[in-house]
Image (cartoon, rainbow, N blue to C red; front, side, top):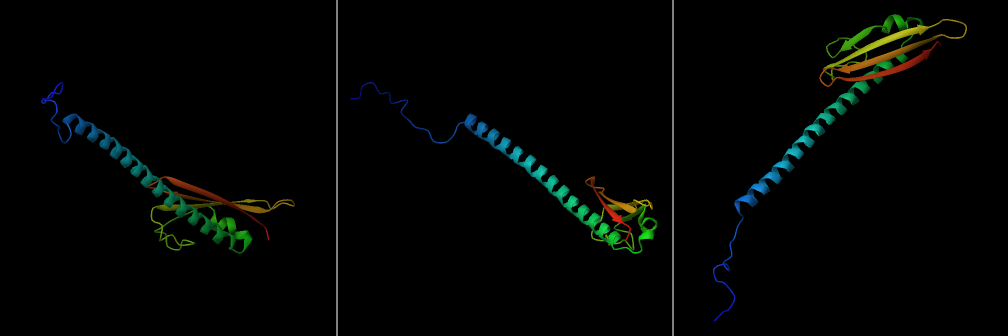
Length: 143
């Protein structure tokens, strides 16, 4: 004969209660929402980085083309206030691999004077979808 032990409370249950299931689902939902926000932000930053790298490449290529231009006296007339897109034929260098980008070149000559004669060239590249803007400048002295 047993004393002090109730036989009714000694049965064991297996499984989870409804409250435990609801709490587990709430925790899982919070984790998944946080993960989806992280994924969305990561994708946005990746797209911006790609656009920034392409814009930088387009600006550098244009500055290199300007630096190779001869003769010096026609730099401003040739490159000032020019704008190119991927649809522009004759873009120097070509922009066919970069749809959605616009490359604008500005050139201003300082001089000629006895102490100063140089051209400042600024290339601005923008991307319409990500509103990314890259601006690079180059100073070319008279040679």
